[in-house]
Amino acid sequence: MLEALIPAMARVTENIGQEGFADSMLAFFEHICPVQSLAAFAFPKDGRPKLLLDIYEDGIIGKQASMNRYMSGAYLLDPYFQACQEQQDSGIYRLAELAADDFEQSEYFKQYFQFANFTDEIGYLLQVEQDYIHLSLCSTKAFDESAKASLQQLSPWVLAIMSQHWREFGQSSSAQEQDDMHQRLQQAFAQFGQSFLTQREAEIARLLLQGHSTKSMAERLGISMETIKVHKRNLYNKLDINSQSELFSLFLNSLSLLGPQDIGDPLLAYHQRPKAT
Image (cartoon, rainbow, N blue to C red; front, side):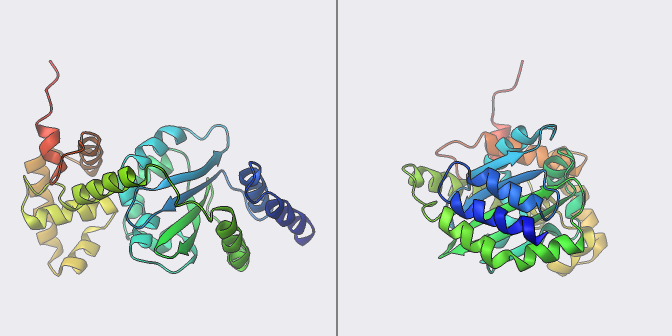
């Protein structure tokens, strides 16, 4: 593998700052393990993510539609984004290391992974002052331990390459507009459902969206699992939904109606929308 890997690394280095960077990076990783999707995001501390690259194999169903929903606000539920908000150290992380315990049962996982036939994700996180660059590798099969070990060993070089290629990622003429929208989306997530639910029910709704199990929520909130179930049943009744899938759809739909002047609970705008006739 080393004989093929060194020329591939050289091609990546030659393409820093060039249009061929993404393809050369994908070719490099494919010498280590199969990769069906390679994407990179800038995660400014106080701004919306910026898509830096996104290439994927033909036949990956719904990838573009999923990416549009992701950039419109679903990124708030991404474990990698959440890790960056918590100032995670630079390095390489498997999705399962960062995600909530029941994440694979969450609607976010089902819509952004299973729908595209992805099974596993490994991501590099590079901290640049208070901002981050996230390089995501997705596969339709689980990455084996030898692949993870190789990707780990190469992480100092990969992080250095990321730093060189995207050193000016934060420069944007619409940065203020992006920051304002991001702040509104974050506030919307923090206050989602509070106009219709008790504070505890709204908190549980957010944890459900993030992929926490009943046990995990009980441990985090210091209450019993039976109490969690009662709160969950009550919030479903109040929001007139029957499943986590409907909760996720309600969250995304309410974000899509968020206007420039809207603050507070996004469900208010959702319920005040004109009804279809």
